[in-house]
Image 1 (cartoon, helix red, strand yellow):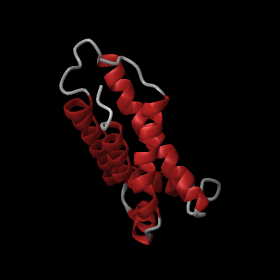
Image 2: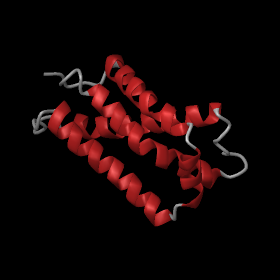
Image 3: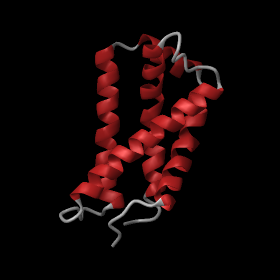
Length: 131
């Protein structure tokens, strides 16, 4: 069993996140949700993203065996979400829909909204190469 996170894992997460970030990022509905959702709903969305990442990682990637690998388990979830958020920000930036200078709150909200489906794509592709 592997106890590390390597460049192959990172590549899989980037590809999976990109696969779902692109179509959702092109959606005007996603941009508007990022502008209009109240903060409590965004926090709930962020929480749901992390919960689903955690459950899927536990069940599929680590196959319920985390006793001796708790640190790498948590680290993998954090890294997967942060890498996903980076991919989403990059795609939105390329589309000129990431107003970090003019409206940073809207930019962060858009990243959170689009990162939910993108993070699931990231972790599913990462699970193709099981621990």
